[in-house]
Structure formats: structure tokens, C-alpha cells
Image 1 (cartoon, one colour):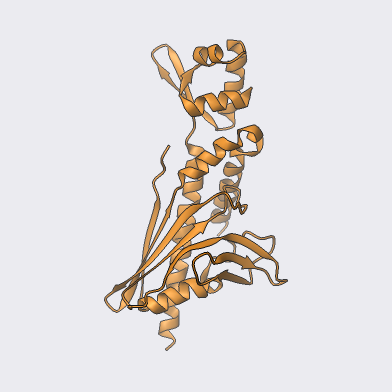
Image 2: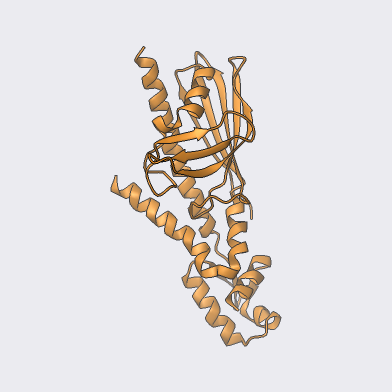
Length: 90
Length: 159
């Protein structure tokens, strides 16, 4: 069921009521699953009027991008240092 | 969801041909040694110099760990401009996956007597698509990214 909720949110950010209407579970069950997903950093929520809208948390991907950004920065600096050192040897 | 590509530029003293050669054929000499994918540190990093060539690391015992492949191989024959387009096929948990492709483009442009090397790593949103595909194994999917990131951050902090 948690997967189905994740899938629904991947399609469209939604409040709890809409999710439970689309899935064969009670509102309180959906709330419970959302709490677990939120703790896992997969889902985030924002207040819109009196409702809370749940959506996928983009930080999961942001973390990969951060890692790669640091990696390429380190790698290119290392490449430049290596290449320039070769030219100084001559 | 679209994620901005990573762009990095560095300038070296060597002219484009030499910079290209060192980047693509002497990778193990400069690649950060801790950034290996195989179980053991790499002894060599091989980028086969042709389109469709493989890109992998090899440890002292000769065991290979694949990284990706060459999509376009355009050495700077004119001495002014060269390019290599690579497929970076390591997923968010640093496992090689033939079905997963993000593009890594390197250009080598003459700049004075040296070379401006530009790197662009794109299609990063595919990491997110992949995470969504892993919904059936949700517990092992996206959280893996966070673990890998945490491990990297710890490594950075330890230096």
C-alpha cells in the first residue's frame, strides 16, 4: 500500500482525503503510511489552507546531484594538478 | 521533475591533444583513488578509445568493475577542439546498470596555449525516475541514495 501511495504522489501531489478516495484504504491508514514515508525522507508536505498537500521529496535526488557535483569538482581539480605537473617536469 | 546538469570547467597548461590523451588514457593517474566502484582499489581505469568502447576499472587481481561506455569519441585532431561523450551507468547506489544511462560530456578547447576542459553531467532526473521505478522494493530503493550520500559526506569530513 505504501508503494501505491508513493506511485499516486509521483503522479500528482495530493491531500490525504484524495489519496484515500483513490485507494482501497481508510483515511487513517493513509495518514499512517504517509508518516512512515515522510520519516524515510521520501515524501514531504506543505499546508494549503486547512489541508496538507503531500508530494515526493526531491531531496532524494538532490543528494545524488550534490554527491556528483563534489565528485566532479574533486576529479577535475585532480586532473588539472596531474596534467600541469607533467608539463612542469619537462 | 527536471534536475539541472552539473557543469564544471578547469584550465590546464597542456594543449588539447595532450589534455585529451591524459584525461582519457591516464585516468588512474589522477582519478581520486577512494572513488572506486569495485571491492578493491583500482589499479587501472580503462576507457577504450572508440565509440561503443567500454569504461571500467580493473583491480590488481585483474577483476573489472564496469562504469559505462563511450558514446562519441572525437579527439582534438585539429589541435583546437575535441570531445568525448560518455555514458555514466552507475546508479544511485554505485552499481553498474546497463539499462541506466546518464550522459557525461567532456570538451577540450584550445585556450591560449593551454586547454579549457569543460564537463557536463546531464540526465540527472533519471536518478529520480529510477527511484520511482523501484517502488516495489521501496525500502531498498530511495533510502539507498541517502546512505550513499551520507557515506560520501563522512568521507569528505574525514579528510
